[in-house]
Length: 286
Image 1 (cartoon, helix red, strand yellow):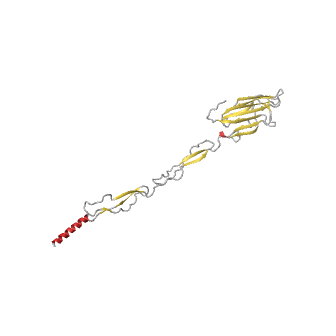
Image 2 (cartoon, rainbow, N blue to C red):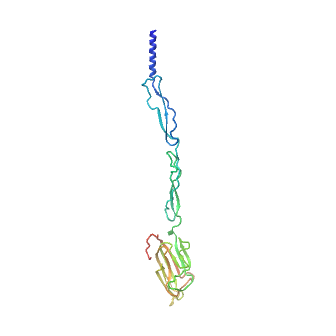
């Protein structure tokens, strides 16, 4: 009887020892918890437990962490939006057509991390200064004396009153005035002027081309001594500043010029050869 009791005790002790040697270990990870942020980047975690027998010893434990962490982002907080367009830049040309541009920024609002960028271009272009450049236009005139002009006074401007051509890119009515006989330069530049005169019958006379009361050239015709309806002509090239005046002035007394006979016989014409900008030096008579 005593032997049986001793055997049973030893068996119980052995079973207890075997049970205490069952290795410990981690249980399955739990579900991920909610994200710490409702938008943008946050943190979420999950947990696990160390599984061990009921009668473990103090030396048995699980290696590692009970909690696991990861970054999370339910959604982007903000998508980008366009701010208002900025001001237009200066035109790339002052005439003849150019381009201007303006910009806008994706800051209304600025996109958050992983938010959508603004859709569309950030720069806008437009055409500007599409009107023709003055230098591309024409300045020219041609006028004739329609009827004979008698008893011209000394210092009187000869008015070539029939205008056949009168073009100026900056003035719809042209630059030659058929009432005053004066050409007024619409642009600064180099011009060519030509004037021809024919004496009436046996008259003789002097006519001079002037720029702002400064004589440029003189023409003399003598209808006397068998030279009836004598004629003369002069051509000048001159630099003009915008607003300068050119005209033909009679410099004798009581003499006459012949008008139209089939075509113009006393004529005045001029045209722009090359424009010069007002800020550039103009060489010539002042």
